[in-house]
Image (cartoon, rainbow, N blue to C red; front, side, top):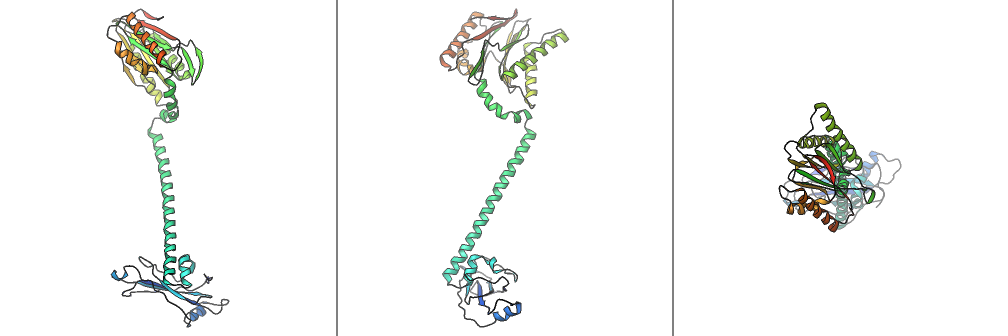
Length: 374
């Protein structure tokens, strides 16, 4: 295409024309570029120059009630042809100060001349480029809007979700796999509670110590077994043990098993809503000193608490719960409870891939807490 003037005059005229809807571009040359002004260009536009006009009729234009026509005269340096091209849809009003470059490459190529097919193809290319840029802009706006929505929802979640859950969400997914590597078992009998815990201190795939006692005597008739994060378990168990003994010193009474479980659950629930929650699983077993009724409570790291006849934490729940459900019955004697525990441990040694050679077994009854061997 020939180079267009930067100060050319663009005129637009809108008419009602019956039977046609079109825009006509007429380009006429000027004798001299240097020193030209608006009057010289205007006089040059009225000069008679050879031109060729091509008309492209709008599809469906004959069905429209109001017909429009825009005539745009563009002065060029070395072009003497003209072309008329239809723009589909409502015609665009052209300002007298709008440069020719604003018409796009397709319109400029049409302004230099050509037949109807070339004019239509050039305009179609310009329209396609326009729609492509609109789609790119829509995509960018959608991406920015999605990012802003994510940021807002993230901020709202930090306001309404407990801080402990938000701070340790990444730890909890790892904790579920870590906690299941330890084994805690509890069985209630006629007037006792039989408990067992593995004595292996491990983290990940590394065994750090053997002979670990994962239980704490809270008072003379209540025992708590724990598993979980090594630091959390020891600290939380000592905290509960010290507070139960402090209650006995202050009030002269020992907390019952139910009262201990309620206190432990409250402390776990409070910790869960802090920025540093305890990640421990617990079994609390005890016997009422007056009535001799045994009780066993299952508590997890989310402070869920339930009273059960037999319970398990860790991988033991996958292998031992079915065995205990099959053979447990109310009023078990101590020997029968030992036999049931042996079956559970034997099932672990046969089916469980982990190596848990040693277990600490304790009995809680009206005479107190003692360790036994099976």
